Image (cartoon, rainbow, N blue to C red; front, side):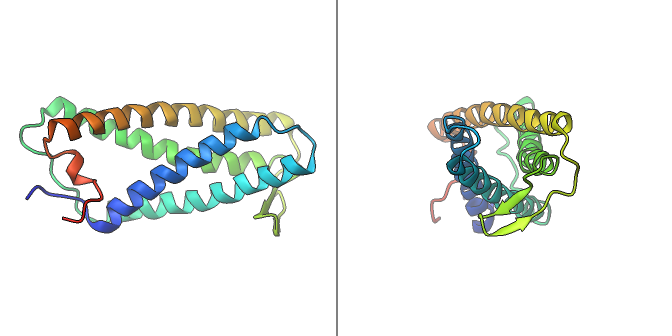
Length: 177
């Protein structure tokens, strides 16, 4: 039997993947809602709230990853591919952290702050500064594009390894054995 990540690591991987893709789709969908409307404000705050929770999930995932052994790659996987995989995973983690952090920082340099699930007001701790807000908001959008691009490559590589049946995909698959 090939080495695999533990059940919790596999569950966190797939849960984070689905939530991040859903959150990105939600963010792009919101661009179609008219600005300065109550409907947009509701959905923006929902996006901010779920983003904060996903950020916490990512921190949990990183903690779990750092405190558990990582399964070895099969000896048949070339070193260059191992280094490439390691690099891509590190950049994915960086972008998964950059998304909620840049979104949260942008929110704190606007007059709106965060209304957590439209119930609890987290007032902004920064000044209402359009320039700083714009920089963090643009960083948030760039991180989303980069994340989605790397996720697409990650999925293609995973499908390739699943097709090859070389043991890489099975390390993270949700199959019970």
